[in-house]
Length: 293
Image: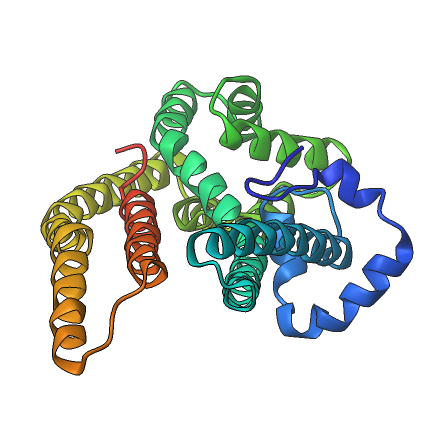
């Protein structure tokens, strides 16, 4: 299993010597939420091992960037000291950036799991409501959902069925599902089911109410995203076209007035920064897209 952008797989990370995890454990206090995030992301690795793998991966990125940029800068400028300095700053920046990305990526995976749940939640609820209205018990309805193809929802309900078969109370098993899921709507759905189990209210009425609430939220999310997308498009056009052109032109004018020149490294750095920011903006726009609606 591989985490995107990390040079080590999860299997390779788990085979790292214990001393690496021991060194990385000193950073654990700065990432106290990492163990829970890894659990929500379904990554089979402990926090200290993941920290160690992230440090090694970020160090490799940093070293490669240092060598590449130092060689290219030395070749274009002819100044070895300047090339080494520029390569060191670039390598250090990329190394820190990749480490922070490794630390944040499990949260992205957890949100993707939640999005996968939200995508199939409406269909699973409709199927459950039809079964309950037909006289099927809640346990059998959840068992049918677990055996169906509703992606992560089927996996979560399969865990619930396994816990119930192991002797856990039906309400307690659903409570555990509500506590471990990252999906807000699955959590609300499960708590509503738990409340109905305890009060003895009709389950079909609760399911209908949950679906109406979810449908209303989906409609609001689509309208909100459509309005927000105009701002993101304007920001992207400014960063992709306007700011680099105006910035370089402004630097040329200042250099002509001050009598200094603009190096190729400055121009490449400006264009590179604009390119990186564009990639980040594209990722942000994609991450804010309503999933499964």
